[in-house]
Length: 260
Length: 260
Image (cartoon, rainbow over all chains, first blue to last red; front, top):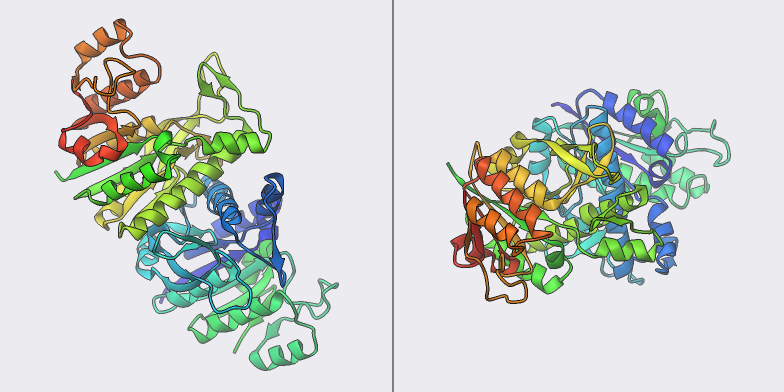
């Protein structure tokens, strides 16, 4: 089977034009098939502030009301996605930017059954793997914004880590998929204040231990949970690390490798 | 050759949720291949006002400075485009939303050689007809936002009427193309205040006469100029009329037909 790299870059990368450009240059040097999933970043928050749209956070998560959904749709699927596409075209990468509504790429449903109503937040039901496969066959690289739809006309805000994991898993029937989570840190750190303390490898046994010891906590937990979901779902490898070191992450010479 | 309908809907339609839905329902009933090009509407202007971004107009045309480009990219390629896609998916139309940067769909250059510097406004150089053809073969309908790119990383604001004409013309080697300009009026009117005064047909001789008599003026002139460019470029038919009456326009039972 052919290799497929699913690269996710976080909001902190998207927010920083220099980091983003470095990262897109690395992305342009990947040999073979690749998909980029991007997060949101602070632009949506600052736009909400400028427009006087109040942001409600519950347990560190943003509640997506109607006005916030409008803003994230504009910023994620419009501004960020199209600027990435224009930059990739300039790097001779034929890229196609998509939300989950486009070509019915990612169908989701509004989150239900939680104590908190997160608003227009979507949990994924289905990925259009056939469309992805066809575009890859035409040597088109996909760049995916973290917006999905419910098939009944409603757009939904969806976590980019989960989108990357779900797409990686869904494509693992057809490709040898490698999932890379690129963010602002060197990897999973043993000491959160020391970038040299990268844990080079984590498996499900050490993961339980590291969580118990509170070495791994907060936002890193759902990311690593997504990594394990991908591996159990058939993805070949998952690596977490500094987005600018994309090529080293892919080589296994940087970052944290997650194994089962 | 197979029929291809290139439908352009103007900003006044996009601004009105009821008209837009009526129009998308009609679009979903088109048999055969179809492409939708949408204009911008007032949302970009009102967003600019909310954000304190001053809009400079010269000769009735907006100057696209950097901040305005950011806004139109968010609104046109993000909010408007993705909401149209979500609605079409709900109508069982498998639609794919695109800017001109996506898949290198529309390459343009920043307008030069004019007395006025219009800013980040693009004049079209090239259309990726092969990509369009491939998507149509897969029964995917394209929905195009009026944003193009220069191939060097710069997004550009581009007139939607011109995008519709250029795409219609470019596809006329492969398809029997019908171009429909849908807007808020019944067609080209003999008396601008009387919706019953539709001129059912205009050719290049009557067009010169109508311009001389000031029956056709201002914004209608570039639209009809685009219609003639399309016809001289190989497009089969061009019709201008009320967007909600899409099916009647396509049947030739409403609107103004342009002929050469």
